[in-house]
Length: 305
Image 1: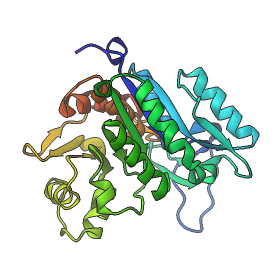
Image 2: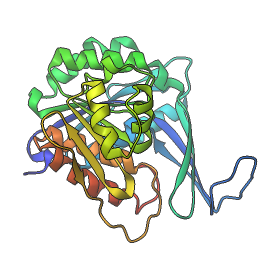
Image 3: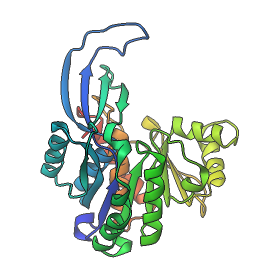
């Protein structure tokens, strides 16, 4: 298997862009508790932006379609993503909206707590998701060399229009439902690959009344309830689980990491890399193996990207 850049693979991301304000603390505060941070930093984040950067680093030509505010922060995000090789032609400022923002706390053991104010991410113009997205998918190359990728940080209307564009263009849609968006089974079933973490899997199991149990038990039930072709469940230090309609569930083991520095964005590194390798023609299992390596590398560094 060659790297995606050698195959002309492309990943089109319809996703969120945030400014991340990160504080590094010894322990995450309890409710009502104030703690002092050891350090603080500001950077570019948002699940869409993070995954676009990961896909680009995996070698795919990457486009990011979404919305920022008509403020200075939006332009800063665009410039930073341009510098990282992501095509931001379709990242548009929305009048009267502020750029999304996230408050991130990272503990000494690498665990984090995150609060997101979506801002402009909830106001992606509908015309951007209609003819312009379909045109981009057509222009980016042959359909078997493209993957369309989006996340649950977008509103349900945006996700629905993205699904329509994927169907009209014949391009596989990878949906990372993190955080779990308030969308129904019909829309989720349109994703070629649905990616969730363990908590999101349990949330879906509750919503669709498929019982309880360990991830290996719940994942096939959830996939059946949603009728999606493939479900990937990320399990953190326990690796990931792949469930499809054509084979038994398979586990992708995690890689050992000597020291976890910051888990922020590790899931996004996984998903963006997964999409890049799928666009390059890798099997879902092989793409997940590469994605696992990217996620493991991500936790050894600070910041979401």
